[in-house]
Image (tube, rainbow, N blue to C red; front, side, top):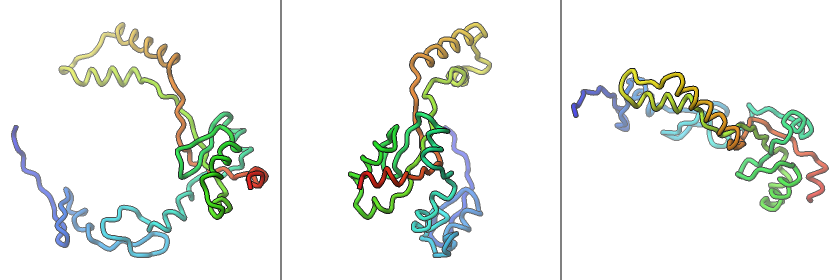
Length: 183
């Protein structure tokens, strides 16, 4: 194996090395929270302090009522921010949450998280591209073989694909009557 020369830059305060001069110059520069101006710890990679990050983490989320959510996303689950637990009904989720939260946390709770869905399935084109890239230069399957493989994978996907739910940037207001029923 041959070795190559690599130029790197070092922060003159802490000695951390970087590929770019700009990163080395900014390494130990004082950083401040973009919301409150508080000085951030050295090597802190967020633009806001922990308190402001928590306070502003839902700023870019869409807000909607539960009725709007089930109308726009019928059959999609709802979940709670500090849990991997999701339910396909608000009442079931709230019952689960109620058991886990203190009274103070329960009374502060105003929103749950909406989820989006996609199917976990095989991308036949990507599989073929990966195989072709790993072979010798100009290697490629003929059109008949490609079409047959893609048709097979598409049929397999139709039969075996699974829905996967991921957190969407949606905050759903908890209906007061549902919450009060669990008090």
